[in-house]
Length: 282
Ligand SMILES: O=c1ccn([C@@H]2O[C@H](COP(=O)(O)O)[C@@H](O)[C@H]2O)c(=O)[nH]1
Image 1 (cartoon, helix red, strand yellow):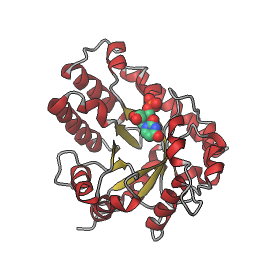
Image 2 (cartoon, helix red, strand yellow; image 1 turned 180 degrees about the vertical axis):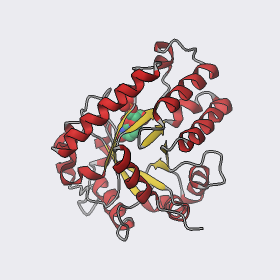
Image 3 (tube, helix red, strand yellow; image 1 turned 60 degrees about the vertical axis):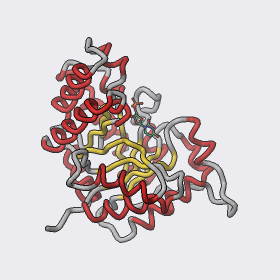
Image 4 (cartoon, helix red, strand yellow; image 1 turned 45 degrees about the vertical axis):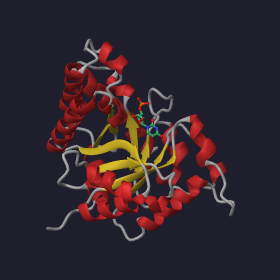
């Protein structure tokens, strides 16, 4: 059996549905705003509603694992169901777990999200490179084998990220630029796009320039920060320049605050999608 690469599947989904990625982030405050209880029943209703509203129309759904983990094993069961239902409805699922550890432990994280036999098998996972890029090798290798993807934190959307990511190594290269260089090498032989992505916040403005980072990695660029964190679709060309075609913009609370009405969730996602289309085309 040949497994189609994640980068190929993502490119097709972006072309067919537009590049928008909507987050499934069941904040306690959103459960309350939706009139739901802050327990498993509320979590289940919230998650099911988002998947029902959006999995048949957006390219990517991104569950934020933390909001499910806080409910223990029953929360993980809700997450497993959401991943399976979203994939069944045609969305790619990017698990936002931000895992990172020494290689031998990383192999277990990789198996959790990228092994087709796992109950949490997803199309891609976010990982943290701060134990050293090569510590991610088990995930990078398993992704290649299973046709899945890996998104590595490079320049995150939060202001605190700069203290680590802009820091210079002894050779003067910034940490962020180094991560992006590794990803470019990983994606070098891929067409139409590699399966190894970077997380680069839509909030960053031109602060990227100071890092010497080159965003041309021939892979997807997950761009969180639109909506609740203050960035807009219009920021995308400013931040990503010529690489904007590979950007997967993420909106979580900006869409989710319109629930629990399914039509209102869809309208909001459609509005963001259309603003993004216009901004990317301009
Ligand atoms: O740099 C990063 C990396 C990940 N995130 C995650 O994306 C969503 C953003 O949610 P909003 O409600 O749209 O602000 C959330 O799950 C974060 O953990 C990020 O924001 N920045």
